Length: 99
Image (cartoon, rainbow, N blue to C red; front, top):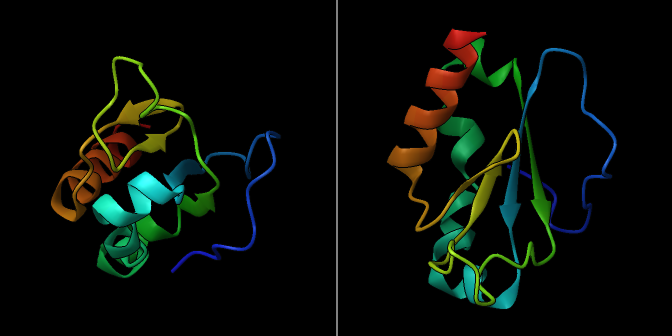
């Protein structure tokens, strides 16, 4: 679970950790970001230990960009639009295992 009241700073996370930023802006929240809050509990422990998951106020991807499908999530800077729990688990696991 991430803290919706704490937005991650732009500074890098802990060394070696994958940073997952879940947009909690109104559109993303209504379109499914509220469900994405549980992503940490779905990751295997060895993957969760190497992942930092934070909520973020509107990331701006639904405003006329090529990623205009809410909810949007950044995984180490790469944007996932129309994010679902299974998609995020798969992408995070793939990224952690590749490092």
